Length: 404
Image (tube, rainbow, N blue to C red; front, side):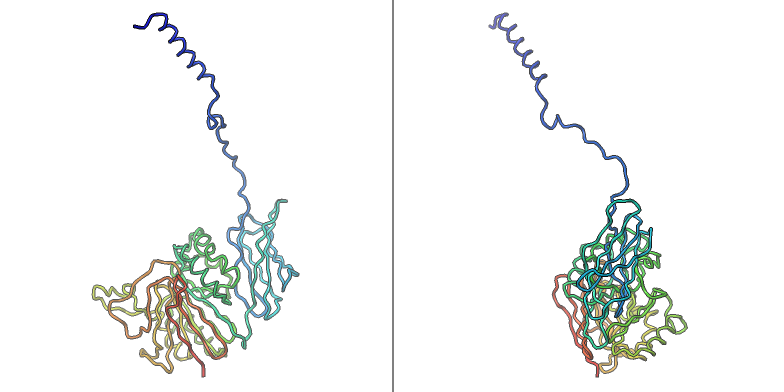
């Protein structure tokens, strides 16, 4: 049995221990002061959209970029050294500068700079490169893909693989974004994943249905008027770009424009592109084939242009819209014609959700694949080489053409 004296001593020792604990320094993390929330202030200046290239000719090219603050823009450029400077518009956030005195057949360096209204440091891009358009007797190459919508990880992979081919330019087959009015999609889902590719070679798009004819399309691209349709010459080829969201029948403005432009073209190679497919083996965009509904086998509005393609001996027609790859046999007057037909290619594998094919094969299908992909075209004089690569850089289709 414990004595009263020992009990008193024990209580004193316990109380003393609690007193010592109360005086002990707090743990290290308990000593840290509460974090101080930063005071609100102006946004740190940065590039919203990195520099990208538009519309190259033998002696000119347009450079665009977007900044988070308004400012005055300049471009320094030259062959080997940055020996020339051009000023752009003042106090803007979307910058557009056209260089008009390029040296043909020579690679150029360029660097953009934006100085804000304050006295802070200017925004300066990395040192980049471009080449003017080649001449009619020179070989060249380009890549094409479409439907880069709502999948920036895949779009970046496709753009990176396309850049590895070192093309002269990019053909984009529409639906560059999923929702045209959403500025965030343009910034984060198109320009960010394509930054390296678009910063080195110009991109020539056509407008898709997902752009919704929004002002963003016309703000972010610098194309010949009226921009929703236009043409351009590159090497010994001429390209004709149309808006397949609009009527394309024989009485339409675009039909008349295309008829006139094709008739006047002196190019060895003639290519047309628009977003919607004249011929398609898709399973449900043009009739629910899994339930026995007859397929229209493509967009009947744009198929009205086939008469012009055949009349003017167009070599190839490209489109997106259906998120697959499909190549037709050469077609003329609704039949396969290996001597005088037009080849139609769907390349909608830039990132949008992949689609499927009808369970019943179509008469015009030569090759098809439901896979993320891009296409690569190389032209030298009267010879053309076409290749299609998937998102793992595996070649899955190719063919050659020769002009007699």
